[in-house]
Each structure stands twice: as C-alpha cells, then as structure tokens.
Image (tube, one colour):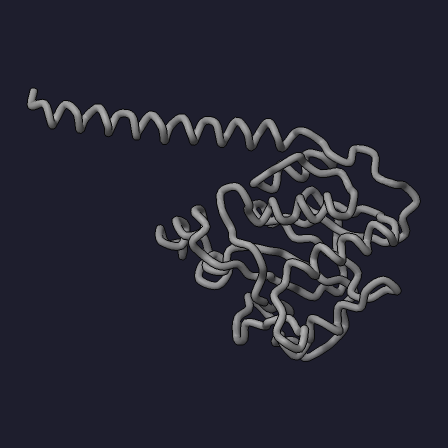
Length: 227
C-alpha cells in the first residue's frame, strides 16, 4: 500500500474514532448530568405560579403577565404581535438559536447549514415570547409555586437574556411570529451543543432556586425532576 495512502487512512480512522468518542461522551454526559438534581429542596410557601412547558423538544418558562414584582407588558407589547385583543394572564419566554426560530417553522424546513451554525456557536440567538389567557397542566406543562424573592431572581435572569437599545428597550425582530400572540426579540449568548434552548430554561429554574438538572441539553432532563 502506498505510504501516503496508508498515512491518510490512519488519520481518517483517528478522526472517525475521535468523533465517535465525542458523541458517546456527550450523550453519556447529557443523560448522567440531567439526572443530577440541584436545588432539591426549594423554599416552600410560594404564592406565585410559574409553568414549565415543552412542545416535546423545546422548553418555555411561563410566568404571570403582571404582579407586584414585574409587569411584563412594559417590555413586551401587544402591538408587536398580530393580536387584536389584550386579554392575557401569562407570558411564555423561550430562548434559542435565531436561525432555528426564524427559518425553521417546521422540522422539515431544517437546513444542514442552520443546524451546523447552531451547534458550533456560529449563529445568533433570539427570545421568543407568547401571551396566554389560560394555561392547562398536563404531562408537558408543570406548575410550580414560588416565592416572590425567587420570582424576582427569575425575572432578573429572563431580563438579562434580552438585548436592549440605547433607550433600554428590548430589540424587537419585526414581522416575525408563529401566530397571533407571539413575537421575537434579539437575545444574548449563542446556541451550541452545550448551551441549548433547554439549557437556558433549566438555568432559569436554577436562577429561581427551583429543582433543576445539573446540566441538560434536552427537555426530558428538566421534566424528570418534576415527575
């Protein structure tokens, strides 16, 4: 066998083994660390309801639209949605890769370039918000009662996830939505294999001193602590 070809095959083999090893270590870490609970005994007696909501892939955090801690309508405006009414009691917040959010309304629309950019810190991020009149608990929507102090810390975490203009207003991404009651905004940080939309939601629970995974890239890693 040609010496150069043999050397090339060895290098290729090492690269393949390296990739396989990375994938195995990543998956084992995701499963293992997802099942390690932090904040296992959150403070009891809270009177503020929040919800953890998943669509089966992506996790949102739902909070009261207005109370004595925070009035979200001062930051997130109905006029930035397609809604004609203003009857809502809860606001959903989600964070994710901007390309995924805006260019991939359905999984069938996913492009390899979008996935590659998201996985390796090459894209930008966005916050997705949605108004809800009511919230129904089920297997993929869990209600938690938290204290005002913990909620204030959650508010600070969500607030810090947005980008702002010089007037300290959130940066609305115009003419982008999935329906009548939602909107997108520019966000901080970048999506990656190690910091996903579900990592953001899990960290939101950590910020609120609630049960959460040590680290998780997927929604089941959050919900396993509430079942």
